Image (cartoon, rainbow, N blue to C red; front, side, top):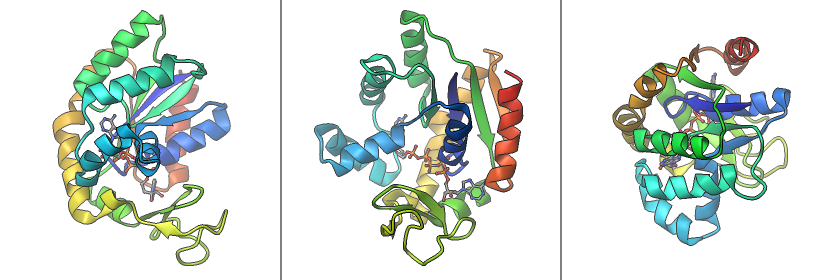
Length: 215
Ligand code: AP5
């Protein structure tokens, strides 16, 4: 299964991708997670990406496409996957289509997660992530048992730099300008599936399962 999770920041793409992985024995490939790992390892790619990410802007297309070609078609590339946060611009989607054509691969569906702006801001400013195992919490909706401490590994919970309210607002603007045009781009493929992403993570997952079971 090859899926794209499409939707604004905070729609729940990462949360739902993990649920799908647990049930459907597939893997999540998150460009955001890959870039954050590059930043924390201080690699050349990470240094290049950091200034964009801190402002809530997008990392240039050629950097992302080069990185994703290796992930999706290099040695050890998985057979099925859920793309979380990629593609994010029309040139990235065109680049992905070219790679799929070159390698005779095909997408099964694009899941478009739809959610209102106020809900997004509320979710993102309350997100906390374990510094150690990267488990994601939410102070409002999925709080840890003990304040500031990961339930799984006891690690410290931190706020992502780009989850401060001003940066979240810029990310939403960037989404509207650069990523929302992908909805039109994929509408013509017959593979775009819209999913109401309000409600609890479990309710949203039920909506997604309905789509997956119809494929
Ligand atoms: P990235 O990490 O991809 O950020 P994003 O797309 O903005 O996604 P988020 O992780 O913020 O949201 P999500 O939809 O995954 O929500 P989540 O499940 O985590 O990218 C970060 C940066 O990297 C970008 O700004 C850019 O600079 C760069 N980048 C990445 N990919 C790129 C690309 N392709 N091209 C160029 N640059 C790129 O949930 C969010 C919170 O809400 C959590 O706290 C969660 O617990 C909670 N939550 C989730 N679902 C629910 C629910 N149903 N109810 C209540 N709370 C919920």
